[in-house]
Each structure stands twice: as structure tokens, then as C-alpha cells.
Amino acid sequence: GYCDNERKQCVCNHGYTGYDCSIHESESHWSILNTPPTLDDSVVGRTDHTSVLWKDWIWVYGGYMFTDDEEVTESGSGQNEIFVDFIRYHLTNGHWEEVIISSITRPQPRDAHTAVVYND
Image (tube, rainbow, N blue to C red):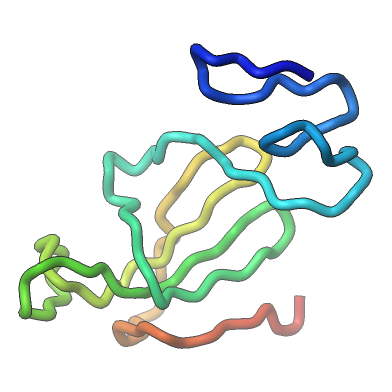
């Protein structure tokens, strides 16, 4: 491969990947997905959320957003917030979407929790 200084990234030869093109595609590796959110900026950065990979989707629930404000809200106001949203990212199509919960009882806001896929 070669380095493209204008785009500030390496352009790898066929069959290779990685920030420096040193990983063969047959090896296990992490990749950064540089795709824009498609939920009108409602998919915001978070910590302490849970996520599971199931089929072609990454499912995400809850989490916490840090700000400089001391207040914690559930209102979506953008201040310190424990999220109650349930979203998923389609790995093949590269888009986010909100998961509509149809039950009367909605899960409580959560952060620092875990999740599993059960009875696929």
C-alpha cells in the first residue's frame, strides 16, 4: 500500500487492511466505521451502554452522556443524561435506526449494565 497524505490514511493493496496496511484480511482485526448517523444527530456518543451483535445488527441500549453540567436528566435535553433509547446499527447497510418498543412497560434508564441475546 501507500500513504495518502491528503486524506491522512493508508491505501492498502488488495487483501490487506489496517492503519498501516500490515494486516492480512484473513486475520482477525478491528476496523473503525466512518459512517454518518442517520437519526438526525439523535445518535450521540455515550459510555456505559450495552451493545450486542445479533445477525447483521449491533443493538444498543441506554448508557450515559458526560457534560460539564451536574444535573442528570432523562429528558433528552443534552445535559448529563442516562439514555432510555434503544437503537441499532445495520452492519451491511451502514445506517442507524430507532427500535420501537411496543410493550406498555418500557425498560428503565440504565447505564453500566450488560445484555445478552437469549433464545435466538
